[in-house]
Structures are given as C-alpha cells and as structure tokens.
Image 1: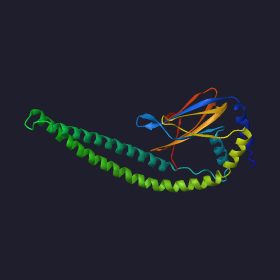
Image 2: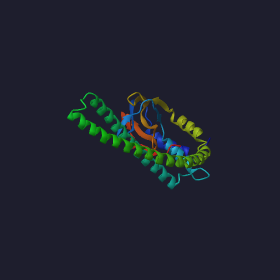
Image 3: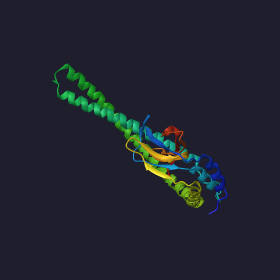
Image 4: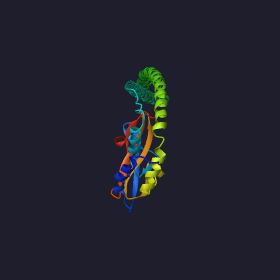
Length: 250
C-alpha cells in the first residue's frame, strides 16, 4: 500500500534511530483521591514512532470530518462526575459515622449505666445516631440524582459512540498496513510488556526515540498516554495523571 505521507513520516523519525540499546523503566501511576497509586498488571507498549501522528494523518485524509462529542453532552458528563464525587463523599462520611457509632456502642457495654461517663457517652451516641440518619438520607438522595443523570447521559453517549466507531472503521481501515510498512522501513517492532505489582516495567530497547503508550480507566473515562522517551538519554519515565490526556472512554 502506498500512502503519500508515509515517506515524510519515515524521514521525520529516521534521524532518531540509533544502534546501541539501553534499559528504559516505566512507572505508571493513576489517581486515587487526592494522591496517586501504582497500576499493576497493565499493558505498556513501546512504539518506535508516534502512533497519534499516524491516526491524525489518516483522519485528515478521511472523506468526512471526524465526529465530535457535542459540547452539551460533555458538560452533562462532567456534571455526572461532580454528582458521583458528591455521592461518594457523603457515603464516606456516613461510613465514618457508622464506624464511630460501633465504637461508642462497644465502649458503652463496658460501663455502668448509672455512671456519669455512661450518660455522657450515651448522649454522644444519640447525637451521632441522628447525624448518621441525616447522612444516610443525603447519601441516598445524592445517589438517586447521580444515577438518573448517569443513565440519561449514558444513552446519548452510546449513540455518539456508535457514530464515532463507524467513522473510525472507515477512516482508520488502512492503519494496520501503514503501521506494518513504517515498522518495516524502521527495522523495528512494537514491544509489549506488563507492569509489575509496583506499577513498573523495564525493557531494553534500541537507542533513539520511542513513544510509550498506555491507558487506564478512571471514573471520568480514561487516562491516555503516548509519551516520547529518548532511550539512551532517559532511563526512567513516569506516566501519571499530570502528563496524561483525559479522554471519554468509547
């Protein structure tokens, strides 16, 4: 297959090829509340070219423009995430109060009901029990509102997904052939590996520029990485939310 832009892409990548090899370690972290945590058992691809550039080239050559997610649907999806976070926050508070109630109940069992300490702790239990009931109502209301909007949004997302996938089936149908031709000219292969329990993977690669590709599902869709690394000049690459693209998962 002949692609008019393939030669230009090869010339762009060729200067970065080098014969000597080095180890490249990739660490993958995903979001976990306000911090991050390692992602284990995740496939990581080491690609000797910029795959996103190939997709962009094919998209520019498509007979019809790429379908886009409507702005109002994106806003609705963002609202779902806000509601989901509100529900989870309320549920976490409710669970914390329930744990406290169980602790107070255990302490009461070891006290004399006629003692001052018992009466003070019993009053504390009653106030916390009222707090638990209020949080439970808030939790259920937040969950119901979140669920209704999520279901309505998901129906529209499914429709948009079908349109986008239909377009991609046509626009990117030549991608496997283009990829095979480019790999043949570069004399390299895509390398696949999996992160260990600490979210790390190390591979020895020929020197030059490689693009490290991975994706992780998150509540907002997915974290997507296609990050270049200069093998021989860089020994560790960290993939984390700050250098990922956040995408709707279709």
